[in-house]
Length: 316
Ligand code: NAP
Image 1: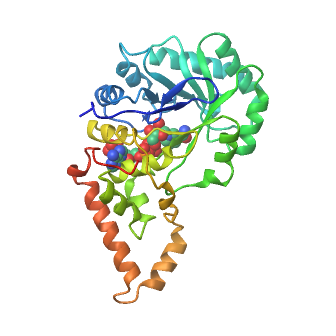
Image 2: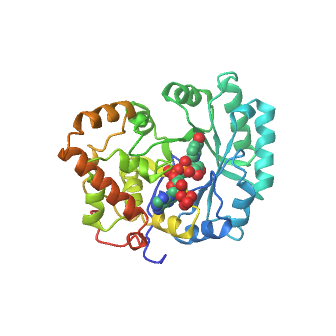
Image 3: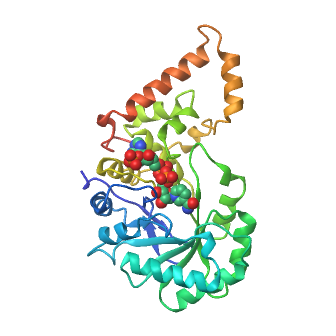
């Protein structure tokens, strides 16, 4: 099943390096090393972990014999951003991962209590020592990112890992554009909104389902590919099973031909949606009837293994 997946790669910041555009998230991951290995074989040679996830040792087992092929990203927690704490955290991650260097070391969250210059000084020291190849951040807003960039002297920030999916487009309010303009890769976490039903819920008129029917791509693949259509954005979906991981890997290798066609799929403001649905809920009212039918069908298809093969004509 892996041989027809052609993983596309995207630039990592301005480093000249390209990384797989679908990586493997490991927060709350319980699948063990084997599904990750299958993901690597399918081209997702990029794995994301963190000192707080408790998955670094499992990642170590997954990359055995493949260290040089896998782009390895981990994170230092916000409470460890003092100079000495950060250096110690990095050493502990290196030990748990069983490697001599981390490819991308990310500040997990900003910590306003600790000067960013101190944190970035420690990060740059790790690069100079050969323990880290590239510096990244995560959950940094535009001002925080700008301050962090200005706090580095020799080694630039190459990525910002942030939540981005069809149901949460907050970064489109400026952060995405900032990253694109400054050559900072956006690593989109939770590209499936942590639960596909959330994406279906913000698409009451069933646009995603219609695209899925037309293209033979699954809803998860369309959601991931929508992120990948954006310049400078890569994704790290988490799947616990080989089936989910391979399905997500097959979100690469093609492009939605009409990504803008998904523009009407908007993040649902719950209160607004309840009000709107109440307003529309006249007996036999078409909007609610159609929306609910599409959502029901969408959920049914999430559990229909026949839709998961990742093959099909596509719109790309
Ligand atoms: P996600 O990837 O959007 O969603 C994961 C959920 O989707 C799991 O319940 C998974 O089920 C399900 N799923 C996966 N593939 C599927 C498919 N093909 N069809 C249907 N359902 C599917 O959410 P996430 O775990 O929050 O984000 C992914 C990664 O981003 C994390 O693992 C972590 O590495 C990173 N992250 C970073 C931060 C940060 O602060 N930097 C925050 C959150 C996440 P199964 O598990 O049963 O397969």
